[in-house]
Amino acid sequence: MKNLCSTTGLVDFHCHLDLYPNHKDLILECERLGIRTLAVTNAPAVWSRNRDLAAGAQYVRVALGLHPQLAAQRQKEIGLFEQFLSETRYVGEVGLDGSRNFRGSLNVQRRVFRQILELCAISGDKILSVHSRQAVPEVLSLLDATEFLRRDRGKIILHWFTGSLAEARRALDMGVYFSVNQRMTTTGNGRRLIEFLPTERLLTESDGPFVSYKDKPITPKAVLDTVNQISSLRRTTAKEIQSRILDNLRRLLQ
Ligand code: MN
Image (cartoon, rainbow, N blue to C red; front, top):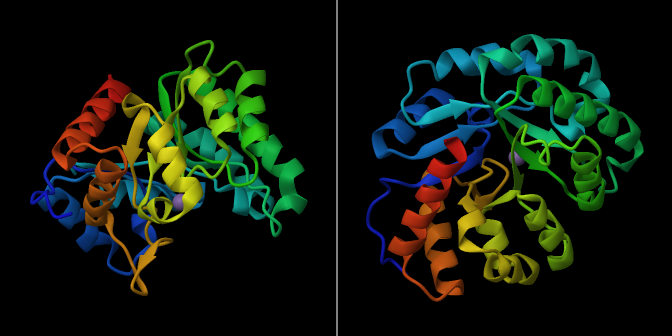
């Protein structure tokens, strides 16, 4: 398993750095290890602080977000979202959550996510990290309805995808990318997805601190383990997977 010894060139395209008590230290660690990290945020109100802490970072980029699980409480912050959008190319965490505890707010979530897609389509060239838990068909339908991808208004990365392979197929046909985390390498559904996705649409993420290992939240450098797991599932070397993922990121950012 340990056929990778370097973190240089790792990609963590979805991590909540601001939800760790040592936020600043983790930014410094990503910088020191050269881990290309997308620090997603959950509400426009926390944007400025996140932006300021990562100002000047070479490897850490901050995304402006409005998490679907907070959409009901934070829908008024869409004005702030609009206000800050020109400050970043990165948007996330956004999307829809149809799981039991959040199903009740799906109407608000849809309205908020649609507004976000429309604002991003107007700006153009945004890169979105999208949550789609138990709402994959709804997320894809909204992308379709807004013609976001067809009109080439930006790029979509589905983070921690838990839909079916048929849904993944539909998403691939629309041109989305997938960011895969350590937890997904431990479930049957996640492993099937990792085997199924074309290498050129794969990215890695930690989704820390929401993913733990041995009761401790993982941090961005844990994507090293995920790269190793992906390589064994896909019967290739970790070096190959790592370099393909870095190529994918570069293509995404062009
Ligand atoms: Mn997340």
